[in-house]
Image (cartoon, rainbow, N blue to C red):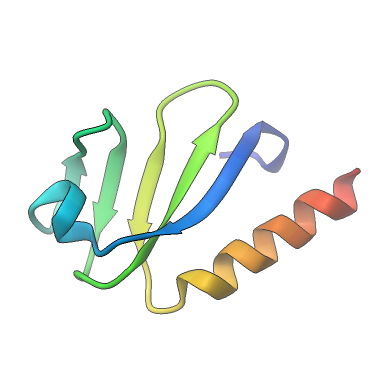
Length: 74
């Protein structure tokens, strides 16, 4: 997802809650998930297209970095 297409980015509950397994999954909210562990993850809501969720070790850092980059773009 290109930075200019991101509408909202946030941390979310563990992946098992939304996707029920590991690998590429489809969530209850019609999002696509890339699940490698059952820890908290990041959900990206684009201005156009399907939401994307991915699990990660440090979702808060990723959200902060992306939000900083979006703010710098204007």
